[in-house]
Length: 122
Image (cartoon, rainbow, N blue to C red; front, side, top):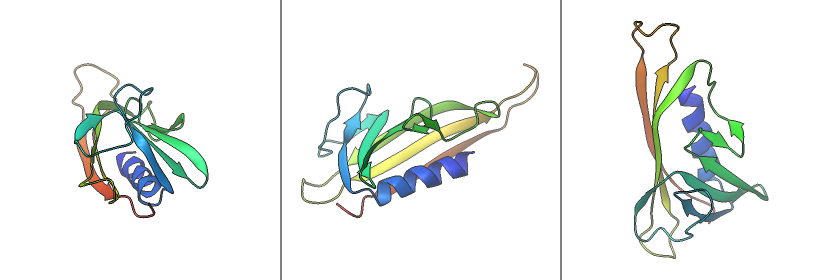
């Protein structure tokens, strides 16, 4: 689940047509990443369509990237940094997933996923 999610998000970001912004609340998007921050949403245009990557539920436009019956999201965040407005932003992706278990006494496996992606096509 985690490998597939981070790969799909990375590809969307890497080959996006334009960067629309980063948001902490999903409604106000900042199109500039010149002051680095931590975000829950990233919006891009890819293949002519506006796509929103969400850390709240690990999804791209309401399509889930993980199976919530098998894993749960322990934490998730995006970072966005840009030296200046003329260079493409670098988007960091970081999340932790835990295995869903059938009982409270059963040990859960947990794993972290982290990468950064420089947007290419801007």
